[in-house]
Image 1: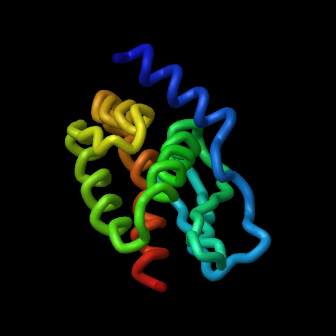
Image 2: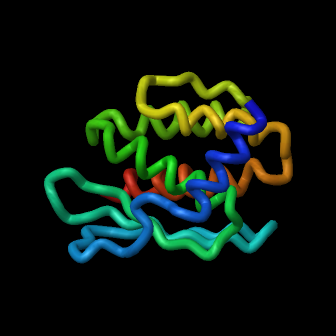
Length: 136
């Protein structure tokens, strides 16, 4: 499992999905983790699918978590996103994310509990998504 964690985090961190600013944006949120300096801007596109995209200046864990997050929630119905985000945030904190058939990559975030100082890095994108959803 440790190999899966490292490979998945490195892959998403160096080749993130949904990275960049959408051409048609409906809203955005910018957040900062003062403990490590991670900064993320999360965008919601102004189209039927309400696609999440992001830009960040952050550690590989934060960037990978954001990549995985956009991959997972962009496949989820808009009405279900809030509950899914809350469930995954709890899972990141406890190391007990359940595979809800959305992605095996999501399960690598269970290993973050082995690195307590990095939990906030992994949570920042999810917290940003939760904040952005409450604004719409």
